[in-house]
View (cartoon, rainbow, N blue to C red):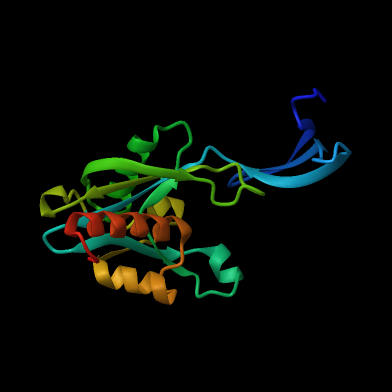
Length: 199
């Protein structure tokens, strides 16, 4: 271990490579007091994801989806989560990925897309970085019906929700998906700045 490097990866083993690669990683860490410890952790490794929230300023609505999420169900929630459209990156540019996911999931293309943040949803057990975008939509952006890819098991309900209702659901726990909460907060702040007050 070099003096300027507190972490050294000793070994990586692939435990599973089905939906995402699950690795067991053994590493050595130099602690702040100078002592050295060795640990092993399991980490899901993937290329990250991209998510997008579309807002219609004329109707004051946002475009969301509702679909079954096994992890939420096993954690004791209903499992049908309200989310922004999103997808795994693979080798795709985040901007390209969100445009594709919008059409696949909602049937809308959107316009004026801009990246607002990227974040680590669970840095202790995921390598994933989520790239988040805001944009706008109108009827001219409709390209299909959405619903996701049936061959991939997707069964996605498209929700056009009043923006104030979406903010209320975040506050009351009806919307609790992290990327969706974050993007709705960014939108809320933008609307506050544009109006000079609360939207």
